Image (cartoon, rainbow, N blue to C red; front, side, top):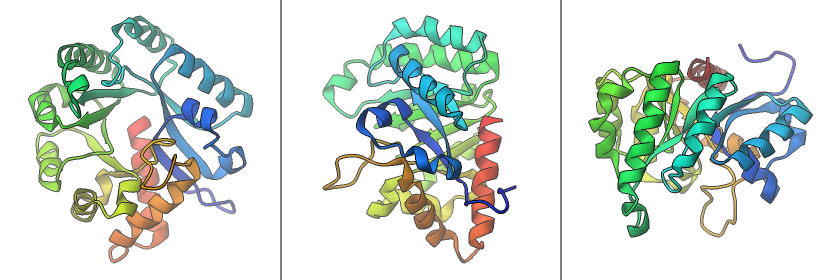
Length: 256
């Protein structure tokens, strides 16, 4: 249930706390109305975010993963140690990124670290956070393995609603999260939010990244703008409190 007699609570399915702290895009005064899952991709990022979380006793879920844009296989041992010590709530973000020639040249190592993380998620019953750009065909290639994972978050999903529905038909327990692209009238995002059931959707900022034209960064507090834009597409079906409760339940299910 949403907390009574307190601020509304906004759940951010995906952001990067360590990087946010470096560029001052996380406002500690909003901590009671903001909860989310922070992804780290290096030991330094992990230690930086954890020190801050512990100092201020924040309600932040923690994920660690080897990102396809920097598929450093030397981080596998660190990830395995975090899993053994039960210090993470999810693996990720991981996946595929073939956006430019540099990333395309890393295709083999991207796939290698993806497979390692996929197996770790299956073996340890952990959710996985997926980054996929210009490579959605790989998601279908791995659908049988993705079915074995308790929950899969397709963060900032860049496919069509047809592709999203096809992934659901593969019996993958998945959610699709979207951020500020919805404020930019991204056609595919609007289509997905309009056509997918609310039970499969989550809001995110990807802060401090995923900023719009003429911006230099995204702030965690902008999660409320994302919520409002989502709700404008769903308001004929739900009251705002019902909408928020559904998003909260989805978030809790993902990281339970």
